[in-house]
Amino acid sequence: MSGTRSPSPRAPATEALIVAHGQPSEPEPAEAGIAALARRVQAVWPGGRVRGATLAMPGSLDTALAKAAHPPLVYPLFMSDGWFTASELSRRIAGRAAAILPPLGLDPALPGLAAGEVARSCAERGWRAEATVLIVAAHGSGRSLNAARAARRFADGIGSALRLGGIRVGFVEEPPGIAEAARDAGPRAICLPFFAAGGGHVAGDVPAALDDAGFRGLRAPPIGSHPAIPALIAQRLGQRAGTDTPGPERYAPASACASGWAGSFSPSMTSK
Image (cartoon, rainbow, N blue to C red; front, side, top):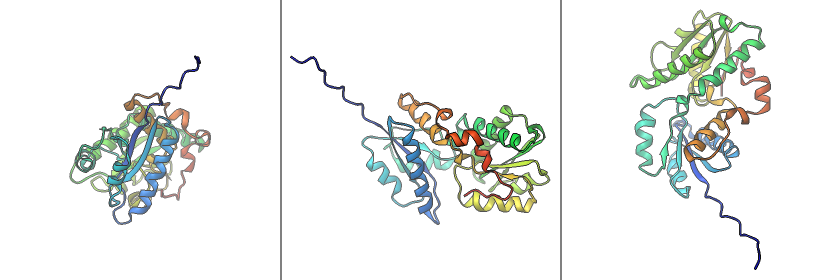
């Protein structure tokens, strides 16, 4: 009789689905973007199988749900718990998910990531953080308080982690507008878009408002493009699935840790 044991069967991978709003007028780029993000999350979460879908691409969500071997964990790539996450996403999933996690914008680690990069950006330019003004540019909503509440919570979290000369919040769809928030901020100022990715608002509305305000400071990429975001998502999925998944500190690319995501800030840059 052989003493060799058969290997234990491997546990099935946890299914996960990252869902974003997308761009109804041009759904393909956002669909490609969410698929790329899913691949990056998959790369740092070996215990899972990750797909992406946007609500704007016809059939995308249903196709992704149908491909899952069992009901997936759903991660909303949204910045607040507004109508899309609280109502529309739940309606369209219709019981086909194991759970819907809190959206990216409410993650308690997000303000710390932003504060670290703002501090690094200030240090690289010889600015004192306490003499620098931060403008948080957010979407807002004319129908719900949740979007503004999430943006202000994010701004407050940055302020708790980093002493700045001032933090202002401006919105695309409600007052105060981004131009109003950015006006007279001075040259030592940073505008950080509180958005999950580049898109129409980040590429168009935000820079237009900054131009209108005569903003002379640095224009940052959206917080959702931070290189540690895939690891942060993987960590949240792993926590919910009960698997051990290291956090964003381990998986942020070395180049991002060395020069900082804030190293991509530029006085003339618009996020795409």
